[in-house]
Length: 56
Image 1: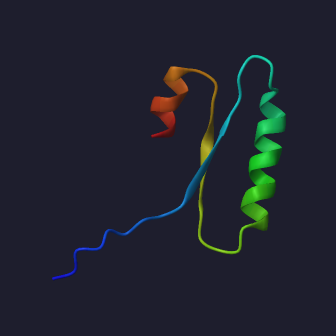
Image 2: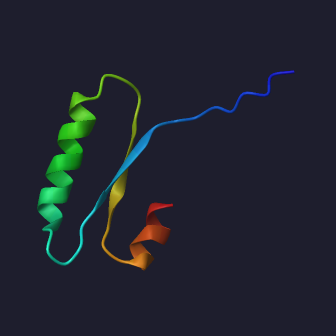
């Protein structure tokens, strides 16, 4: 019996009132590009609680 969970890495960008959405997206893209492994790049940028539901 194998009782070890399978974990996958993912990244999501967050943008609030004082932080431009384009900057969040560029920073996230740079991290994904620099990472040397498998990573899930969430296409939704979170600005509000409703966006959080979309990201899930």
